[in-house]
Image (cartoon, rainbow, N blue to C red; front, side, top):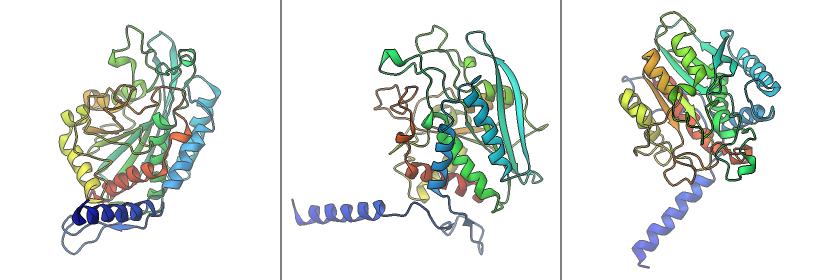
Length: 337
């Protein structure tokens, strides 16, 4: 190869080495000049990836969080008690909802608020239940087994629990509400003729969208986290997010790019995903966006490779990815005035 090409190659190896040697815990950051009012500096608390990872593992230690099981009940208690360590403003929105198969399920949306007296508000959310059957497992014999949901569910909750921990000691300029939705993943099996009907999914977010936890609740916008823990995840520009709230997508992706996370947050369009944010947009009429791992090369549709399989387990979770998403979320919170 030419000396020029060789130099570029060596430089890329050097930079890659620097990246791989970066510590997992990051120091508080200051945002680049020009993003704030003159004379001000934004100090953001350091998001700890290993702490988020521990929160993901704590959920999986209960086993699959399938509605109606002891694991589901135990995890609900854990989430409520954990949030109460970080804020006194915690409530559980209990509800009942009929599933695709006619079964009436008992659900719990778990809600924590930080500085709720402030008028300006931001809402963050994820779903905490896991799927009752692994209908996309490559092994047909396993398709009736429950899904652990380390990435599909627990990863987003783990990131937001670490955000909650940080908000307990660092006050941003706005109020923040964190909501863990239940009954998101109790939709029909892949081969069921009703599979495509939107109303069978996101039962917890549908209930909350019709019955917000506060009267006339109007946050500036909502960020949903879903499947945010896999190695080398790519968070594409999800279709409904771009349809309902393109300016909010741009805001968050611009922050990610300024932080050097272009590889994780490319300016590349993804598909339209029927997820909790869809119902928040459609029913509650609150602009909501979805940070979700989408992979056009996946053998499992456009999702994370182990989506809705028995292999969605803790060994698929990468603390670096959790850290990237957490960095972007906490930076977004503290940029809001």
